[in-house]
Length: 435
Image 1 (cartoon, rainbow, N blue to C red):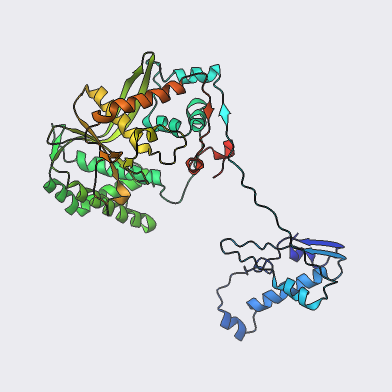
Image 2: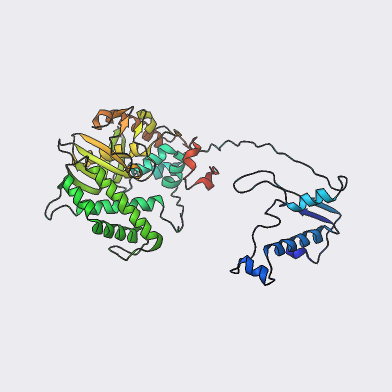
């Protein structure tokens, strides 16, 4: 019951659980367009008048009660000060100690360990998994799905075995995923537009990149089109003018693209081969274990020495260095970097699809850091990866062990021991591991 509803009622026992300052009396009052000085000049109600009404309600409420319990919280967090209401201070001052008792209760904070969940694989689960091994099923695992299994087998189980889907709902802001989609789309169009009619590839020089950077109008049009399609959902090839916050997002995206192109001048010249290249292949890991793998590579280039470069754009906080190969495959390792597992899978898929056995360099663009950091090769144990073949045997061994575990009916799906991995998980309400 609110305090307004108590005006004509008397109570024997009253319990008020929110007697903190600025909670009672409330710090929120009816909004008004009339300035405070004008209200005072014309005798209208002011903040002080509203607070006096609250004081009347409070003392009127407790006047005839036999037992009154007034509770307040001494904890301080955020903007909460933990101070008792002014009315409590008044009561302590006005009444003798034998009439008003003050009791302090303290509670021990107990750290609750995250629940460790384990789900045994049923026959139905093994049947659902078998489609990723059957070449005729048309079902594939993607690099992100495999990374999800490594990070948290339980999350993989819910999404890829039980087919649970969580609706993220509508947002009034551009989330990281949509931001990445816009960036990928613009970069793809910029490079593909350099390819001459009748050709599949084109050489990209520093001059080519300079021309892209200087053509601000074209960049703005491409960004506008991509935002209209992926964020505002206005359809493809829509160049409607952006306004308000969307326009600011567009201007920021243009600056990011220009910075990326500027950094790429350090890598030129190179031959642009493909953008957003889709692939589907059978990845043989061990006798009887051949995986259906499918995905999309952000970009493929060829360097002047013949090395193929497989590039992945990352708009998040992915790092491009790890201490050792084990960090790719350890569940619950807070230093796990998904970009390594994904880019190695992309490189192997490209080699299989193109029947290519030459050097491949994996490259990850840390888009958010390009303003301060140049584009650099990835590193394992402080050794730069210039050719994936130098590390691929060890990578395939680690991947094979984890995939054997995935398709082993005796190995259950377990939740990750790393609570940090739960921060952006869609299934925290199901497994009750809110971080």
